[in-house]
Image 1 (cartoon, rainbow, N blue to C red):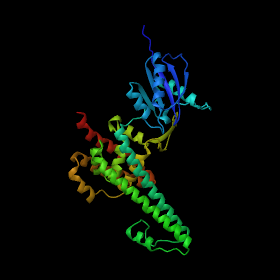
Image 2: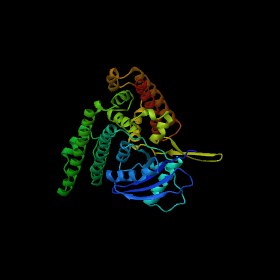
Image 3: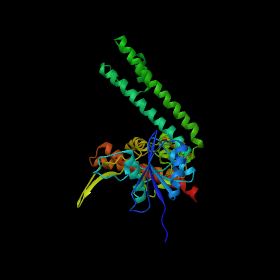
Image 4: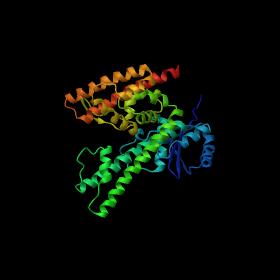
Length: 371
C-alpha cells in the first residue's frame, strides 16, 4: 500500500510577514498552524527545512501587491508553488471572521481540494516591459484628469472656449493668451496649465522608452501585427500583448473574452435566465484600451492612410483577418444601434468581438513558433 505524503502549505503573504498553515493529503487530517515568519529568504529556507520531513511540499498564496517574487524563489529552490486568483477563491458566505491564520488555513485546504484557480505568472522580462506599459497608461490617465481639472476651473469662472475644446493647436494658443481677472485666479490657472504640460511630457517620455525597448521584447512581432486592425495604435497593441503575455493559454476566444471581463454577467434559476452588464472581472488595463479602439468601428469601412503605410510590414493573412474584422464589427455596431441599443453597449459588444479577432491573429502569429 502506498501513502500520499504531500503536504499542502498555505501562505498568507503581507509586506512584513507571512502566516503559514499546512495540511496533509488525508481528507480527515485537520490543518495545522505553523506560525508567522518574515519575508526574508533565510526565513523561507528555514520554513522549507522545517516542513521537509513531513513529505513533498506544495505551496500556495494569493496574488497581491507583493508580486511573484516568492513564487519565483520557491521555484528556484525546487519547490512547487501556485499563485491563486483572489476573486476565484471559494469562500463560505456565512463566515464573518477573517484573520491571517484562517486565510492561510483556507488556502491550504483549497489547494488540497483542487478548487483554486492559478494566475498566469509572466517571466521577469515580460513583467518588466508590462510595468513600463502600465506606467504609460497611468500617465495617460493623469493627463486626462489634469485636463478635466483645468476645464472645470474655467467653467466655474464662466470662461468658455468658442470652438471645440479638444486641445488642438488653436485651443492651446487660446489658453496661452488667456488672462484671468484676478491675480490669484491667474496663479491657479497657470499651475493647472503647467500640470497638463508636465504630465504630457512624462507620457511622451514613457512612449519614447516603449519604442526603444519594444524590439527586444518577445511580444514585439505580435504587437506589430495587431497594427493592421482599425483603432489599434502601437501603445494599444503593446498593452494588449503585454497584459496577455501568452495567447496560447486560452484554448478558445471566448475564454480570452472572459479573462478580459467582456462576457455578460448572469443570474439564472430554473426556467428564468437573466443576463446583465459585462462582468468587468478581468484585466482592466487591456479591456479599457480595447473599448477605446472599438469606437473607431462606428465609421464606414475604409483602409486609412496610416494602416496602408503599415501594410508592407504585416503578414498578408493578418491583413485579411483585420479587414474581415473591419467589415464584421462595423456591421455589428450599426445593427445594434438600429435595434435601439445605447452606443456604450454597442461599442462594448464590438470590443468583445475585437478581442476574439486579436486572439485569432495571435494564433496565426504564434503557430509557426510552435511547429
